[in-house]
Image (cartoon, rainbow, N blue to C red):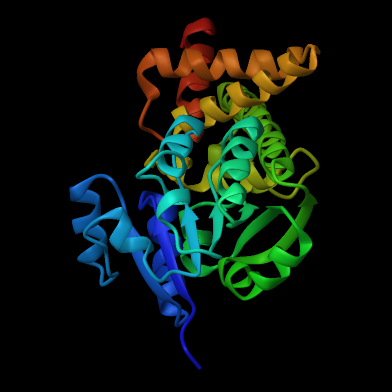
Length: 297
């Protein structure tokens, strides 16, 4: 049986991890990134990389994109040199990025107008889950297209959840990240307060990780932070970008979301204080510094 031919466009932390996972699971994978140094790095790990985007997409039944924001997704999908133009007739284009639903619908309409199938598939999980195929995959699009793509989607994730039409999965993903980052911010502030009140950090984590205040974000992100490790598994600026997407959706609906607005403001303050490029859990360092300063310690 022939291997399923897949292209992965965007070889950052998530895209490269997904591509390598698929390659290990016997898919015929070709990668592409606009940055030559990124292509070289991924090629050094044994993943075939195309010389051009057109070369990468040729003969691929599925084209996956994992890109930083909606503007780059539109640039990559649309136009004479875009994915929708270069993909083989009948191919399925799958976007895994976290972007605004309107941008997803725009690129989908264009691609579908060329006879391509489109799935809107943001994921929950980080590079570690992407590398091992344990992501949660949210799917917006036609049921038939999703079912046809199931072998590929199931290789990416341990759970596949159909959310409705194209664009709906982006809504769910942005809402998820808004909740997760709100949870993280409150956890960082509360944890720093507990430390300032004299509780040992390891003891505090051990108890809280089994108690009602815990969240998946807390139990996943705090262990490295407590060792002083703020290496980016999910960059603070990406978290702030996703929070901004949530606020944009609220504005379009004409509603106020004061809690999410405050969360986004505080993430912005963390960026202004120099925590950009670090993991979102670097909020803990900001909260520690603020509480210690106010307490005169």
